[in-house]
Length: 437
Image (cartoon, rainbow, N blue to C red; front, side, top):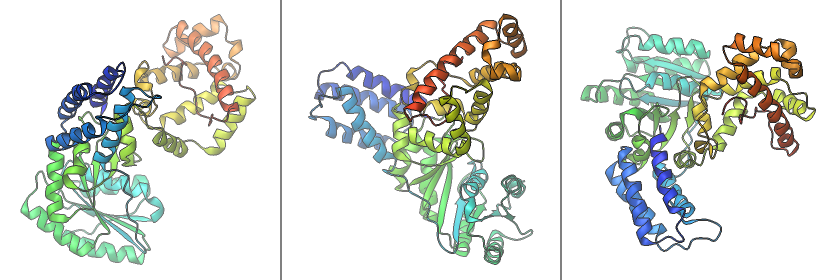
């Protein structure tokens, strides 16, 4: 989402790299461009105005440390202010005993029902019960039931009942069956109206939620901020979930939401899979915007996707110099579980300056390895000229692609061995080379 804003901000900071010191003039010039970049990203005008004023105040007259350049100094100031603009720190969802109740609300099309299921998956250990309270949108109940079956999470629904009655029955059922978390999906509309809000208020009074979360579509830009304000006035929401943060929107909603509504962004939807819901970390988002990566989120994703025992086995194989194409194929498939490659690359510091790596590159590598025999994967040294031609033909690639992969795999294996000996390797594949650049 933040790609365009990120590129523009990095261009601004590049110009400051050659400066000997921070002056009022070069700061003013830089801030003018930062201001334009933020406005083009659809950030609220008042938010931009306050942001620029705070950065100027902190940057002007600052003594540049000998160890860093003026460009780096201004990046730090901008980073710190971005973190504050986005909310300062992550705000956790409150879990209550013996039962947590989450009321989900939002306009139709915001991704509310899918987000409800994603949230249940994230807190599956709490034995969640999903409550289908959207009785108006065609197939809304069916959609939640299908999602519940996919996740093996129970969905409660009572036919021919208004939302308040469904709510009452669901709470009684949840108490009887020891559900520690109840998440209720509610009806949305194409626009905010009096009838919708009156019904939501009745549901809220019956449900007595621990938290009321508003789901807003990040793709709607400044409209998302206005929608959040109106819902908050009526419902006194506890937080916001930004859906479709992986989309092609300019990022203005995320950068404006906290300042304008004074409500925290608690979660962000970052993909279509039901596991694609992240806690919203302002410091990590700010780092991504400034091209500084987000190693913590990457590590968390890896820890969830990679089996610890398998990782240790892989590490041992690397140390023993017995890591094969067969092992690499397994690792490659696990890597794809982490999410879209472009998203992963954005979490690695400095990757924006590297040649672009695309999903098709990984697919090409996988196709070449899959075209090898089991013995060839285990012993690449036996792959002679005729075998390489057969592998290229089977994978729809060229012999040069096969040659390059084998050569780079050998080099990468040596590098991985060095890294592992230093205690840095965690059994993950080395992406540099291997036909990806």
